[in-house]
Image (cartoon, rainbow, N blue to C red):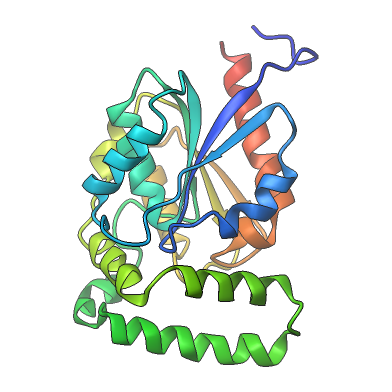
Length: 240
């Protein structure tokens, strides 16, 4: 068992949500202790949008890392489980953050036909109006959201939405050889609490940490997210 006073470095691979960028990870990256080495795998702004294609990109990105914990945020939760199955000797633990193993709402599947670029553009615009009026030009959320919209095209987001509407990672979760932590926002309207309940039904051993916040709780509440991750890693170490 590792003596906690002598902290061995650990690598944390972070897989982003639909935007595929590191932007919404930045507050968490600043909160992590020095002994946790983050490695964000960004998704290409063009091209691959299917989970299988993204898995190949992620595996290539971690090919030189001998062992690591992996965090899958939202869209990337199933991808983290796919990586754990593909690299069982490397993945020491899986962290599912505000995510799901099947499409998070039935209505999303029924409205599959709306997952096209013009619809995503309209949704982005409608969301942008209250953010812009309620927050000053120096507000970090406003700036980060604007950066993402500039970097990631609506058609790419739409294609990733269509991919998640077909996903079913329940068997991957059940077979996962690594311990699993689920971090959920206390008021997540995008991925409701019943998704956490399904994760626990599929795999009762999953640890659950509920933190204050909505769907982007790991962005708006990075300290609580960091504490949950550190506690998970330390528990794994004590068991070794």
